[in-house]
Length: 500
Image (tube, rainbow, N blue to C red; front, side, top):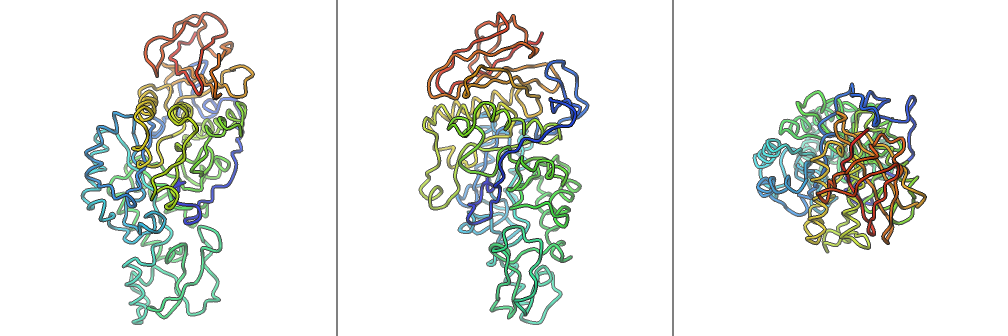
């Protein structure tokens, strides 16, 4: 989100790799390869799933830009939970410059944006969310601070006065020679790393993105980042999407080791650059989540199947990315299409849509959340502008997912043959404990279709009456090896079925 979420031209969203499905050494079923459950045998898993594998439904707030009050969000928690939301994301919890990267450029690492409330308001929100079974995560910058930050302004004055050892001065890299080699842990493209002249200090400082960078080769810089992260971990936050991101070992302590060792919570840890093409590298580094596709505001695995960029086989290859993550004890994530560009989206409140948003965005949720990808709304401001029908139907998908263990990220997944149409697709999902199985069938065409699935070899009982988990009531009976459902344009079925 830049979390795609920061405009790519501003804050370096570099997730450019295409999805390349990874192979697993010993099994066609990633859950089995990792001690998980076979969707046909019901063998119990030796691995305990994480908190984030047992919920879905993200809601992201551009709190700095829009000035949402933490107290108001706290009052809305019951409503959000009733609508299927289980994770609240903030961009960002600390005070930042609203007009630089929509608020992610840090002005004060130790206080929330004043327009959002006080530090106590933030803590109250986190505590209240936890009492209601919700998680709280954030996009977070731990690689630089804004050049207008009072902390840096103080450092400039101290440096001018001859101080070279204060906490503020020693946090940053200074030089009198602009030909001095730049720090090598740059966290972004070369053109975002430079020596910048400070008139106040009378010296050059290392600038990364929009202000002085944290050079992780400096002990004092590392110490300051440690203070910052502990400050927010002490509030009970449940995870971070770090700005930009790298797998450089010098960053690893602050990106994964410190949060995991310091927090009492199971944390969601990722970076905006992490995507499934490099899943093994991110997982080995210590992250436990990454984009199922890539860091892209306006495209995801659903959009590519409906617009013809890929077909049912390509969709299956993409969805295997979440199976691979599950086998690693991790998750993948994505968001409903959205946009965070200030001129194109935030100021005019105009966001990307599908040609038939009221049905397609609902099918998007049914596919992405239904397949076990962590999914939700990338921007609350966009969500509240959806039609009543869209919101009600979209929320019903998330409630359906969160109330059925066979649809959670921890559940295994297996494709079910659904004919030769490149825009029809089906899959079977089985809960981690083997007690519930769901059959999901999709028509990605712009016209109605009869979709026939082949149940042979799936383990699904061929003589039963399924329950319709999304619409309620019963679905037409299954009375043979094949099963046909009538689906409208961009329609889907989520059925509770029995195994043999």
